Amino acid sequence: MPITIEIKFDPRETLPAKLSRQAGLRGLTDAEFAKRLIADGLERLDTGNNQPAEPGETMDDFLIRNGALYPNK
Image (cartoon, rainbow, N blue to C red; front, side):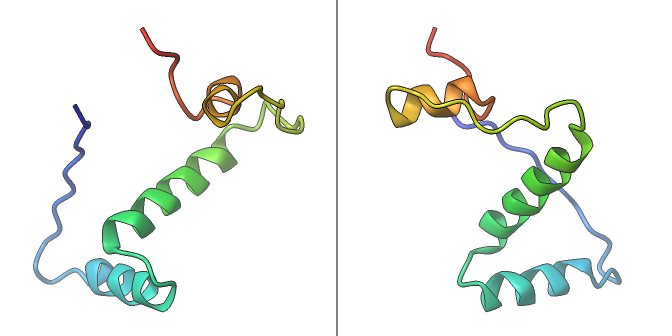
């Protein structure tokens, strides 16, 4: 089941319109672009790992080894 994070904006805030405009320029949905911005921001905060990505045997293994996915339970 997907995890949902809801973000609410005041009607006077301009951020939602800016996000939508930038998403459209990149051919992304607002949600796709917001997820990309969050991932990029968190990547900048994780200053302890300046190593290259660890190779994996499969794409799923690669994503797990490099912290993008949790292993299957």
